[in-house]
Length: 179
Image 1 (tube, rainbow, N blue to C red):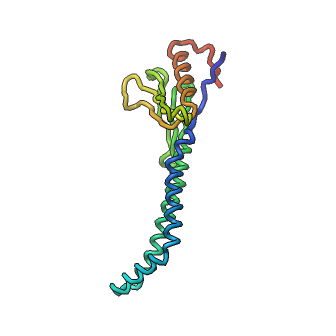
Image 2 (cartoon, one colour):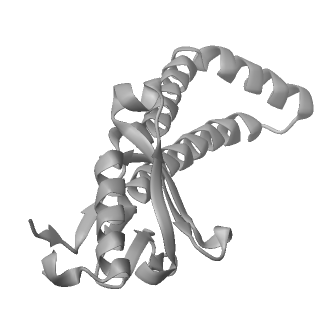
Image 3 (cartoon, one colour):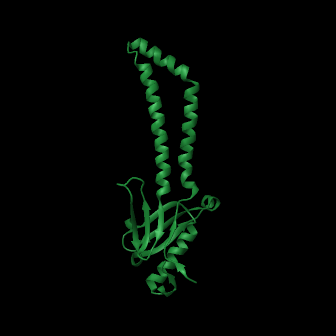
Protein backbone atom coordinates (compact mmCIF):
# COMPACT_ATOMS: atom_id res chain seq x y z
CA UNK A 1 0.00 0.00 0.00
CA UNK A 2 1.43 3.33 -1.02
CA UNK A 3 0.85 6.34 1.20
CA UNK A 4 0.74 9.76 -0.46
CA UNK A 5 3.19 12.20 1.11
CA UNK A 6 1.35 15.37 0.19
CA UNK A 7 -2.08 15.61 1.72
CA UNK A 8 -3.92 18.62 3.09
CA UNK A 9 -6.63 18.96 5.70
CA UNK A 10 -8.98 21.83 6.47
CA UNK A 11 -11.15 23.12 9.29
CA UNK A 12 -14.54 21.55 9.93
CA UNK A 13 -17.90 23.27 9.60
CA UNK A 14 -17.94 23.73 13.36
CA UNK A 15 -15.18 26.33 13.11
CA UNK A 16 -17.66 28.65 11.40
CA UNK A 17 -20.41 28.29 14.02
CA UNK A 18 -19.18 31.16 16.20
CA UNK A 19 -19.04 33.49 13.19
CA UNK A 20 -22.54 32.55 12.08
CA UNK A 21 -23.97 32.99 15.57
CA UNK A 22 -22.38 36.45 15.53
CA UNK A 23 -24.04 37.06 12.15
CA UNK A 24 -27.46 36.00 13.45
CA UNK A 25 -27.10 38.31 16.46
CA UNK A 26 -26.09 41.10 14.07
CA UNK A 27 -29.21 40.54 11.94
CA UNK A 28 -31.46 40.47 15.03
CA UNK A 29 -29.86 43.68 16.30
CA UNK A 30 -30.34 45.35 12.92
CA UNK A 31 -33.99 44.34 12.72
CA UNK A 32 -34.57 45.56 16.28
CA UNK A 33 -32.91 48.91 15.61
CA UNK A 34 -34.83 49.41 12.38
CA UNK A 35 -38.14 48.60 14.08
CA UNK A 36 -37.36 50.94 16.97
CA UNK A 37 -35.78 53.69 14.89
CA UNK A 38 -38.56 56.12 15.81
CA UNK A 39 -37.82 55.74 19.53
CA UNK A 40 -34.09 56.19 18.92
CA UNK A 41 -34.78 59.17 16.71
CA UNK A 42 -37.03 60.75 19.39
CA UNK A 43 -34.31 60.23 22.01
CA UNK A 44 -31.52 61.73 19.92
CA UNK A 45 -33.80 64.56 18.76
CA UNK A 46 -34.71 65.47 22.34
CA UNK A 47 -31.03 65.21 23.32
CA UNK A 48 -30.03 67.50 20.47
CA UNK A 49 -32.76 70.02 21.39
CA UNK A 50 -31.67 70.05 25.04
CA UNK A 51 -28.01 70.52 24.25
CA UNK A 52 -28.46 72.78 21.25
CA UNK A 53 -26.43 70.49 18.99
CA UNK A 54 -28.83 69.65 16.17
CA UNK A 55 -26.30 67.42 14.42
CA UNK A 56 -26.45 64.73 17.18
CA UNK A 57 -29.51 63.04 15.63
CA UNK A 58 -27.89 62.67 12.19
CA UNK A 59 -24.55 61.68 13.68
CA UNK A 60 -26.13 58.87 15.72
CA UNK A 61 -27.85 57.46 12.63
CA UNK A 62 -24.59 57.62 10.70
CA UNK A 63 -22.67 55.99 13.57
CA UNK A 64 -25.20 53.15 13.70
CA UNK A 65 -24.78 52.45 10.00
CA UNK A 66 -20.97 52.57 10.25
CA UNK A 67 -20.91 50.22 13.24
CA UNK A 68 -23.18 47.71 11.49
CA UNK A 69 -21.03 47.82 8.35
CA UNK A 70 -17.85 47.28 10.39
CA UNK A 71 -19.40 44.34 12.22
CA UNK A 72 -20.45 42.80 8.91
CA UNK A 73 -16.93 43.30 7.55
CA UNK A 74 -15.55 41.60 10.66
CA UNK A 75 -17.82 38.62 9.99
CA UNK A 76 -16.55 38.32 6.43
CA UNK A 77 -12.92 38.56 7.55
CA UNK A 78 -13.47 35.91 10.25
CA UNK A 79 -14.93 33.47 7.73
CA UNK A 80 -12.08 34.11 5.26
CA UNK A 81 -9.49 33.68 8.01
CA UNK A 82 -10.94 30.37 9.17
CA UNK A 83 -11.12 29.22 5.56
CA UNK A 84 -7.43 30.00 5.05
CA UNK A 85 -6.23 27.36 7.54
CA UNK A 86 -4.63 24.37 5.87
CA UNK A 87 -2.73 21.59 7.66
CA UNK A 88 -0.62 19.69 5.17
CA UNK A 89 2.24 17.21 4.90
CA UNK A 90 5.07 17.00 2.41
CA UNK A 91 8.49 15.37 2.18
CA UNK A 92 9.89 17.75 4.79
CA UNK A 93 7.28 17.53 7.52
CA UNK A 94 3.91 18.77 8.76
CA UNK A 95 2.95 22.38 8.12
CA UNK A 96 0.14 24.76 9.05
CA UNK A 97 -0.63 27.53 6.56
CA UNK A 98 -2.93 30.46 7.33
CA UNK A 99 -3.54 34.11 6.54
CA UNK A 100 -5.69 36.24 4.28
CA UNK A 101 -3.63 39.39 3.84
CA UNK A 102 -0.25 39.33 2.06
CA UNK A 103 1.56 40.50 5.19
CA UNK A 104 -0.08 37.84 7.39
CA UNK A 105 0.12 34.80 5.11
CA UNK A 106 2.60 32.17 6.13
CA UNK A 107 3.23 28.70 7.37
CA UNK A 108 4.91 27.11 10.32
CA UNK A 109 5.55 23.49 10.97
CA UNK A 110 7.67 20.65 12.22
CA UNK A 111 10.17 18.57 10.26
CA UNK A 112 9.75 14.80 10.34
CA UNK A 113 12.84 14.24 12.50
CA UNK A 114 11.55 16.70 15.12
CA UNK A 115 8.02 15.25 15.49
CA UNK A 116 7.32 13.34 18.68
CA UNK A 117 3.80 12.22 17.75
CA UNK A 118 0.41 13.34 16.52
CA UNK A 119 -2.76 12.93 18.53
CA UNK A 120 -6.36 14.05 18.56
CA UNK A 121 -8.82 14.71 21.35
CA UNK A 122 -12.23 13.13 21.37
CA UNK A 123 -15.43 13.81 23.17
CA UNK A 124 -19.14 13.49 22.61
CA UNK A 125 -19.45 16.81 20.78
CA UNK A 126 -16.41 16.17 18.56
CA UNK A 127 -17.70 12.70 17.74
CA UNK A 128 -21.18 14.04 17.01
CA UNK A 129 -19.95 16.94 14.86
CA UNK A 130 -17.01 15.10 13.28
CA UNK A 131 -14.66 17.85 14.36
CA UNK A 132 -11.52 17.10 16.35
CA UNK A 133 -8.70 18.94 18.04
CA UNK A 134 -5.40 17.81 16.50
CA UNK A 135 -1.99 18.20 18.11
CA UNK A 136 1.37 17.48 16.51
CA UNK A 137 4.01 17.60 19.23
CA UNK A 138 7.58 18.78 18.76
CA UNK A 139 10.18 16.55 20.44
CA UNK A 140 12.31 19.33 21.90
CA UNK A 141 10.15 22.42 22.35
CA UNK A 142 6.49 22.22 23.25
CA UNK A 143 5.99 25.83 22.11
CA UNK A 144 6.69 24.76 18.52
CA UNK A 145 3.90 22.17 18.54
CA UNK A 146 0.95 22.46 16.16
CA UNK A 147 -2.39 22.62 17.98
CA UNK A 148 -5.56 23.13 15.95
CA UNK A 149 -9.16 22.74 17.00
CA UNK A 150 -12.19 22.11 14.78
CA UNK A 151 -10.29 20.02 12.23
CA UNK A 152 -12.31 17.94 9.79
CA UNK A 153 -11.20 14.31 9.49
CA UNK A 154 -9.10 14.66 12.65
CA UNK A 155 -8.69 10.91 12.99
CA UNK A 156 -7.46 10.65 9.41
CA UNK A 157 -5.04 13.56 9.96
CA UNK A 158 -3.42 11.83 12.93
CA UNK A 159 -3.25 8.44 11.22
CA UNK A 160 -1.68 10.00 8.13
CA UNK A 161 0.92 11.99 10.09
CA UNK A 162 1.88 9.11 12.39
CA UNK A 163 2.15 6.71 9.44
CA UNK A 164 4.41 9.07 7.50
CA UNK A 165 6.44 9.83 10.61
CA UNK A 166 7.01 6.11 11.13
CA UNK A 167 8.14 5.69 7.52
CA UNK A 168 10.44 8.71 7.45
CA UNK A 169 11.84 8.35 10.94
CA UNK A 170 12.35 4.58 10.88
CA UNK A 171 13.58 4.70 7.32
CA UNK A 172 10.94 2.60 5.54
CA UNK A 173 10.35 5.21 2.87
CA UNK A 174 10.26 2.70 -0.01
CA UNK A 175 6.45 2.45 0.27
CA UNK A 176 5.91 6.21 0.15
CA UNK A 177 4.40 7.74 -2.98
CA UNK A 178 6.41 10.92 -3.62
CA UNK A 179 3.70 12.78 -5.56
